[in-house]
Length: 289
Image 1: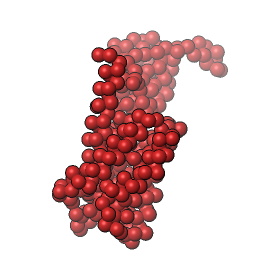
Image 2: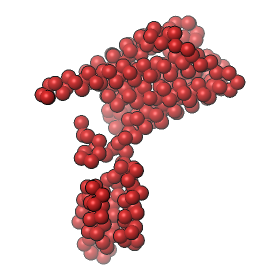
Image 3: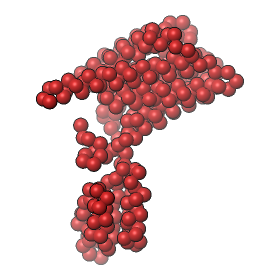
């Protein structure tokens, strides 16, 4: 397959996933948050609040509010991202106002608001996670999230989403005059953030270990038998001046315990530094695209 064909095929997959993700997000809004007056942050939260006051359709409001943000996005984000964003916004608007219009909704009763916020957050987070994973957005504060992530990539998208959306959720109190609804909105935003990070980063996270031992080669040999890449770095003790080899290895989260056990069995006196890796890309891990 030629490079051009691969590019076209990837775009087709991206668009399909973005439409599906937008549909999942819309389902969370239509079935759980909107019927229970939960403003789940961002433009959707603002649209929910305005819809409560004016009876305008939430999807239409989302499209209208997105116009200035889309214009900003065209200047600050690449055209590919903005094209995907337009598709996401259009899908979200059509599905929320029309395609899902007759889908049954959940009306909270007797404290059921917490269920609405959790399940709404799960669906919305899952939808956004799918969209983000294909380098798209559903517009709104998602564009702001992408802009911040472009300049501050070390900040996770879920964290950005939580900070931006929590402010909108709290502002719902001005309209609803109900503190319970505001707390449900914060729960929904929190669940969204966790689901987004699990989908976008969960499969890429790993552990990075630096192992200082008197038996570096033995440890390296045992780790190699586990079919994991190992690197030996030359080090020198600042105090002793002794040269020694440092064993470095990156592993999936579920392999971490096994590696630690191997090190302990080989050299109980080893000194090990362990750090979390938000992403591990390359051979043996997620493909570097």
